[in-house]
Image (cartoon, rainbow, N blue to C red; front, side, top):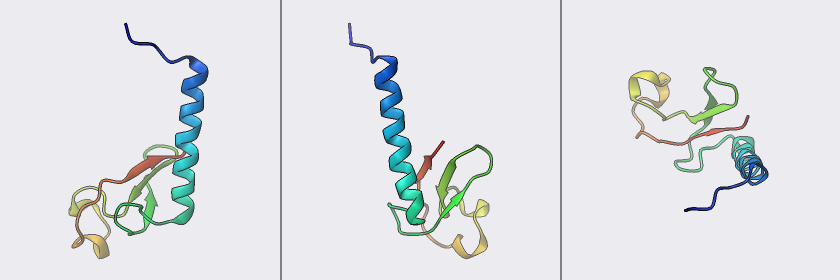
Length: 75
């Protein structure tokens, strides 16, 4: 039977992931493609590359750029 993580270990891991995401967001630049990041207001703390999703959902100046899958949560 696989070992289950304790609640404390889970909380520590989530805190590390949030800190890493906050550091990326502080730069304002996508680590995968170098384009700007933007907040998705659908959920608190949700950040995405401006090239995330299909071009029809992006701002006009980013529609012709290749898609990027970067997104993170800071909260």
